[in-house]
Length: 353
Ligand code: CP3
Image 1: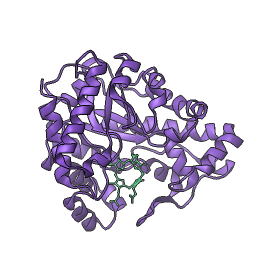
Image 2 (image 1 turned 120 degrees about the vertical axis):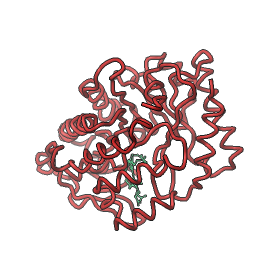
Image 3 (image 1 turned 60 degrees about the horizontal axis):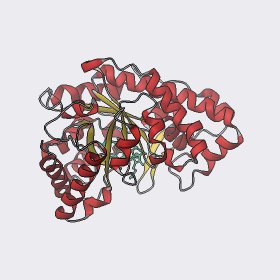
Image 4 (image 1 turned 90 degrees about the horizontal axis):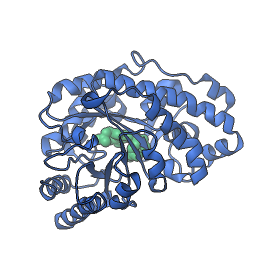
């Protein structure tokens, strides 16, 4: 591989510069993405076409010297393949035609077949891997069981997650049945992406942070532990590292490091120095610039990137090893591509060893 900074940093090995990639690095902030989406007709048509998914995966890499590609897809492909009927309403985000509301709905859920129902994702992974030709590693991903359950039960996005939290509180056994089958699906999905060529795997626990500490442990962490234990990922230099990213997971970093994951991704409310100190070098840390920083001037972006790099080193005995630079959450459609470029350049310059 020509650029293996990401994989080396995830293994906490020395690198020449801190690797950087950006959550939602492929997306509507790029005019070329909007053109491909228009050509495809819709986001889902684009995601389900391996050649177009490959094209939009590569678009940000043609502009910026990013250290990784991330599969262009969505976390909701899994519940879609479980029969829930994913669709998007312009301006309202994702929705399901058949949300999970009753015991019968839960009993009907089954792990989808990776070779048929989710074949398009695996074809995208192998196409992207071939087109990357070893230039940078390819990250595959899945939603966390809890985060997928939020969309499956709510039927879309939510302000307060009242339905899914009520299910967990009123009928924990039913909630655990839902989370169990979803976890089996997530593990099979990530394993299939690895088999198709993904070189690192990230789990997005976007909504773990909306739970109280005890509910987080019972309904989110427990299933992240199962993924970290059960997902086959090889050994040594051939190991496919697992990154557990969570928005609002700052209260649970020790527990996340104890799962056996290779890396923990954090949002901008966490001090990176504290994150390293609290996880004691057991995992790599990914993050964590506030994405809103990308609306600020290139000078401010550079200053804040330097601050995040130095916070990490301050907690790691002065060393930058074991840090993967990223935003604390995804990019937004109205961000200026030049500002993303300024961030990538600043991280590389300021972290040169
Ligand atoms: O990071 C990348 O570049 C890879 C692609 C990626 C997408 N979605 C593409 C996408 C990834 C990793 C995701 C994950 C995802 N999807 C998450 C977890 C990450 C996070 O942001 O917390 C979640 C919660 C979803 C569910 C989802 N899908 C939402 C909330 C939306 C946005 C709806 C909207 O209209 O803003 C989507 C659609 C989606 N997924 C888009 C993209 C680029 C926008 C689609 C478009 O072009 O209209």
